[in-house]
Image (tube, rainbow over all chains, first blue to last red; front, side):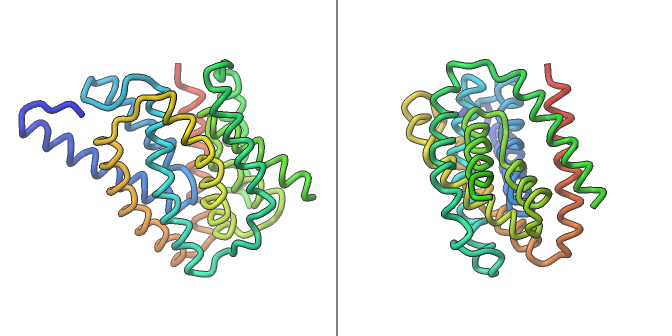
Length: 133
Length: 116
């Protein structure tokens, strides 16, 4: 991490800490969304040359590493409250592992910009559906 | 139906691995298509994500540069926030959470469309 003058460094640390709490809160509250917020935070840090990582792909890897333990804690909290059980999970496990591996391997090989736009339109449409239910 | 569940899980995990996004997609599938409750779907999605991202972590560790100091800050404070967020999700009316989720989807979709 970039270390400037002490005061500047402390300010950056405080802002980063607060933003991390906010991203974690959203992840716990909505069961998703922490990743996109971390990507946003890391991109801003890189653009402003205030530390962070070297590239968008490094941002993405850092985000996955961060979100993994955060999601584990959130999932445990949901399970402790009896919101869902392990019995519902097995059908998703193998496709999740296979899909995750495929995506990580393909990351360097395909252009995802068009897929991103389609994904954005799908989630906007779904969001409107959620609000109208 | 199991085939659709598995296909949906594979596509969402692959999109997550590609960095397109995907966390919200499984919740959308579970709630809008399968009719599962909002909070239950969120819990399933969180656990699902552990498998989807866990499998790609080793690949990323090999290929990418991780800033571990920065990562520690994100994790420690992120976990603090996630505990508060999970407790809130389990305490308030699910329809409120569903609406917040809907707004979040529209906002993040809009941001993705407007970028570049």
